[in-house]
Length: 234
Length: 234
DNA sequence: AAGGCTACTACACGCGCGTGTAGCCGTCGA
DNA sequence: TCGACGGCTACACGCGCGTGTAGTAGCCTT
Image (cartoon, rainbow over all chains, first blue to last red; front, side, top):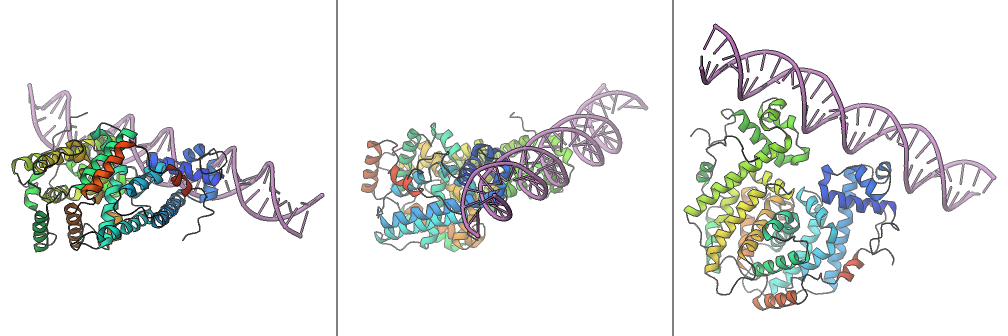
């Protein structure tokens, strides 16, 4: 009962190392983060990190497993307490639950790791879509899992690209103001289709006609016909 | 005229180094990529890389600048040839134009770099939204730049998380089949609002009432009350 | 023809990293 | 009481990296 506020004093050394790794990996990325730095943050020697986790890679995998379990628990909780029925709280809850681990997750996913975490979130998205699909008259274009995966990826774009988003929004997306502004924008996007039904039908028609042909490949090539001559922007 | 197909033989050594860097940075990330490896791919000595670009960091910035210029050109082209009016070809064209640089861009953006490239894409998104907003009766919730930034981020989620998307979709998103499937799913998502208008209004109302308060923080804390006891998976 | 500048190479330096190894100390079971 | 085991530390190794430096070949200017 005394552990759920993050008091690093009371935690096991192993847990403290894991938490420190989560933070260092999230802040600096896997490559730039050092075992020595993690050990220092955890208040232990660097040898102990190796003793508990074996290698840097294994430490990363332990972090992934920890988050995967956390997401799995979140998944269960969402299933029991059915707050579903088309509520954006799903993604808000998810972001809040990941909390400080959001940055780690963002980096790990962008680097191609933490696959079980992603898959867990896709499973969550499928749950959500299962309910949302019920209120929908027309059949979906693609199977649920694919739509869920794309939706999860889109939701993850926010923490992954938070730096660029913050810069373009003028506020830190992790601050309360930024969060509010972001949620507002997301609400707008999620409640307004970017494509009208007939435009979508036309696009889908065109899509099926030439499967996977990239549009206007030659005009694309024309874009890069000249080389740059000296990069004079400091 | 002879340069727009990528014949690495005819290119300047500087350009060849830049291309090799784009590829190495994109494939392995900035940290794992080595100057020596880039030099070998470019067919030059590692010293020449330093001679032309000064440092690894400067090489990265040169890559960013190159892509920023490319996106800027794409931007101009889209402005003149008005293929606008709510066409998804915008993002398809963008992805095709970036082409092989997509992976570099994805990694660079995820690592927080290539800011001008992102901003250029936001500018492009604003153009698109300017036209789309015309067909819209109700006023948008958030200003255009913010919505554009979020939209760009979402579009970029695909190349950034391509590995996880491919795994969940069962096909490589960069293959023609994967591209088709992805486009279909995107079409579905973009043409169907995830939120009904009244649900959006309710959510927006709730959002304005408690600005930025994370939902149910205590239940979130309850999720991580127990530590894991040994990671015995795999 | 001479000078110099630029593209380019070969080689060495030094630092920081992950990783190995040896050993200490508290605890717990016999 | 004693031995052993696991948590934990200190220290050293070696490798790969970015970076510096010295030097060579070719072209362009005067």
